[in-house]
Amino acid sequence: MSLSTVGYPALMGAQLSKIIMPHYAAALLGRKDILEDIAQCFTTALVTIRLRRELEWIMESSNFELCQSDEQVYTKAKALVSQIHQLLGLYLGLYYKPLSISSIMILNDDDEVIRRRIYATMEVRVHLRATRTFNPTASGSVATDVLSGAFDDPAITEALSLVGDETPTWARVYDIIKFLGDEDSIAKSGLAPRHDTRRVRQTANHYRHLGSPKKHPLPLNPPTLSEAALFATDLLKKWIANRI
Image (tube, one colour):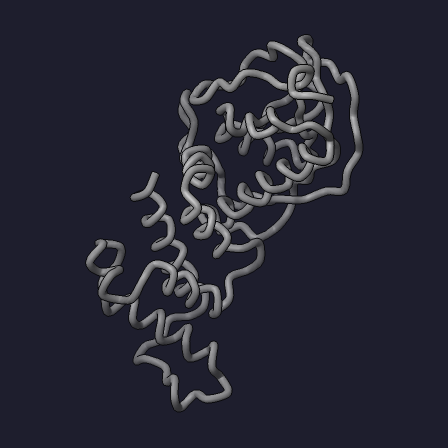
């Protein structure tokens, strides 16, 4: 099906509160309380999560406009869910999967399903309250601001990919710090004091090279993995905030 029959005009910066012509959407499965929490943080044309006719939760996106097939929509929907997952991992400390994409559908003007295709699932989980972290407003939220930034800025996309979708490791902590620069550049940018960054980086580097610990000794008072992961993700959040 072509763009002319399934697309909808972009309404950047405004909530998709009214369906004006047939368009693609992705159906989501998950706990009601989690979906309600997330939905308040994704209300722009780039990503909207809403309850359709009190029947099911769906995700809509302007990224679906140019898609010519269900497969293309599913690919883009998976990419969006993956980035949302990375956001939840970075900002909420989430590395689990309570939400899933269950199908791709086309909706008509009355928000009714014209056609549906069932797909495999991709999941996302929330731990902290999303509304307390992403600060949703009438024009969007931190979450949608970051997704919009990633759309235009490959560096933000790369930063989100460093978070990944699993529990943080020492290698990932090290990679995040190296992505942001060395201790001096991080301190110069105002993200963290030089000695704090050095302590975390040195500890992460030690555990990356356990085969040769003498060459990569631990610092005095090394942080735990949890402390180091929190430090690294806080750096990344500050860096992203400076770019959006």
